[in-house]
Image 1 (cartoon, rainbow, N blue to C red):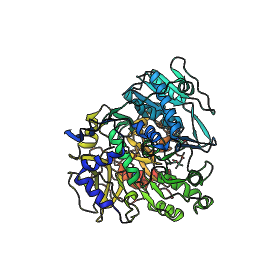
Image 2 (image 1 turned 90 degrees about the vertical axis):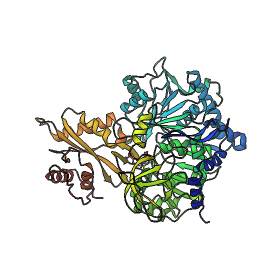
Image 3 (image 1 turned 135 degrees about the vertical axis):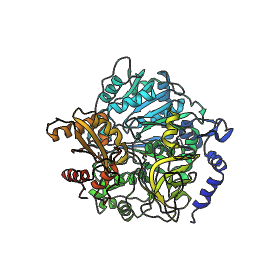
Image 4 (image 1 turned 90 degrees about the horizontal axis):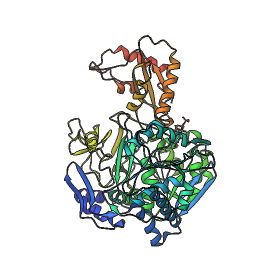
Length: 633
Ligand code: COA
Ligand code: AMP
């Protein structure tokens, strides 16, 4: 089939309002919009102004009314507990309506916030959709974060209700969630009125009388709640993501633009049809989980998989193929790190042959750079298209992809192909001038952003403007650097800020430095992201100790490793640090982190002309050798 990509992209650029008004036909509206795109308050833009809808109605109720009641909406597959439970659209609608009733009985109404701190169990999806049903705003926090990170999110979002579970399962380990939640609430300035706790058989959580309620009891007792129509521009959720400091950014998603963009993406980017099975092997705590476990597949009438397992070890490197075969998955979306883990355990892909992958068409990778070796390995073993695509929490759906639904374009390894319709992507120099094809620069999106992207940060228009819109007036700054080649293909090479990507998880080295700096023996510190064969990048810390500190370095390193785990969480994978005499700096005092990364990764580097004292780079090289860098591979 000849690709319709070019004509579709051209139309989305020439007539964005017409393009997205047409796409909005896939959504059921309670009231049609007055204006498709309102840019009357630059640099802010709002989509479908004046329209009203309910996202939960669009994800569930209308599919039941249209005859999909008996189709599976959600399949929870949990290899460790042995559970593989399907919820039909009818069942999920009824459960969500009752959960919404329980939330309402606890005082949750339109625009109230509900914090969801849940493992990968159906109740997490139910809680999100129940919020959407009431017009309440959910804020899901990934389970691998420590109480301190929860505190920041509680204090910023000010939730009336927190929904959690007694434990999560990490491989065979049960991780109690409730003590972490109790600690976070103790430390937070804002206290929720109530917590609803799903008790799991593996761990029983102690409930605090008056504040905590049992999820099962509350939902069983509740009267079902109807969908509350909200403005298209009302917030659906807040998702906190790492910025350059330890203070996370509250990315806001609206209801209308989000529903339109996600529904469009399912058919046109992912090429799946209603009724097919879509599996995003991520976590509901990340944007991939929000968009492609919960909202997009349901908005499109697909069956979505909620997988509470790992790519390896639950029980083996054939786990993904078992799920694809058992549930008839048409498209899988995961992070390259998962494939590196599978490749490491099963280099010949022998597990693949044990399963019938007959209905599986396409593999999508995102979340970090897809290294060509991993992509080629997956292509060779699976004999199916492997599509690298590029996006971020802020955009909520892909900015760059090979839109297989429009007819795939030729693949270039190392590139997520071309800008997705709706995104005018340019590569800029530091003066915001577009650079020539093939030249590296800052990747930016010309405003306005298409529907689905963040309209602002939670209660922080200024922060939104400063973080994303100020450096390149008229553009949204992605924070990524790269180039566009002569054929218009995008290449995403690196971040331009302190964000690193560890096993597909976005983390701030600035946030980790704040933790290291709080250690009483540390005078100065730096954290860099070093290349890692499995996780893509891992953080490595450098500590300069205060004068007179003469405790064993290994002790201090162990303490800072523990501190990062306690304050940020295990997900940071902060395991390695080294003590150095000095940090390499420019004469104006800026730490040369980029040069340190090159040394850690074994790349050649030129000594920066502005360096204060070049000898320090030799000291850093020796220190890194002492902790095993450059990695052997
Ligand atoms: N709740 C509690 N703890 C969690 C957690 C959660 N939801 N998710 C991760 N953790 C913990 C892990 O148990 C681990 O703890 P440990 O240091 O005690 O072992 C730590 O955080 C680091 O986790 P992770 O980076 O996931 O490493 P891993 O060694 O457990 O697994 C992979 C490595 C590659 C198998 C794993 O990262 C993976 O499956 N990645 C898939 C990619 C993905 O889902 N990306 C999301 C964006 S698309
Ligand atoms: P997150 O907000 O967690 O989704 O992380 C977004 C960041 O991950 C992007 O800004 C990129 O730096 C990186 N990223 C995501 N997808 C890709 C990709 N396909 N190629 C390269 N980097 C990617």
